[in-house]
Amino acid sequence: MGSTDLVALREQCFALIEAHFKRPDVNPVWLAQELYVSRRQLDRAFAGGPGVAEILGRRRLKQVVIMAARNPTVAMSVIAVHCGYSTYETFRSQCHRYLHRTPRQARRDLSVTLAA
Image (cartoon, rainbow, N blue to C red; front, side):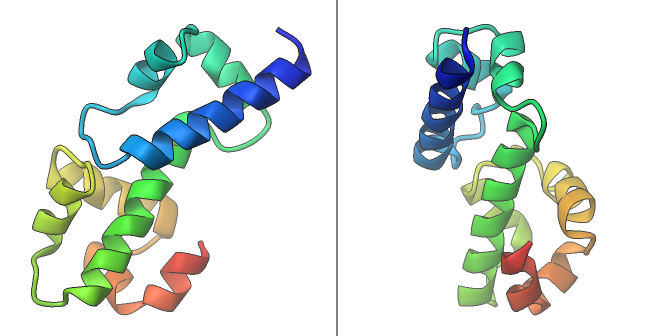
């Protein structure tokens, strides 16, 4: 696969993530299957930058924080599940990994979080 093909594959993957990120079964293996490529080939399309799992995680996180800011009385665990996380622990882990904040801090620091 040439570099042009990898760019096209990456763009198709971004579109799939945007369309399906709220589904808990969406993960890098699912994305590769939907794109009819191997997981290794999908990883090649993202070489040199954030990986496909990170892109998916960051997209979900962004949605969680937006929803949390708009719905301050709704529990973060409920919002996280609505945005595609199968467990609150996975959400909390990604919050720490990518945002360097606890879920509560992320909710409070909306402007900082969305810029990440």
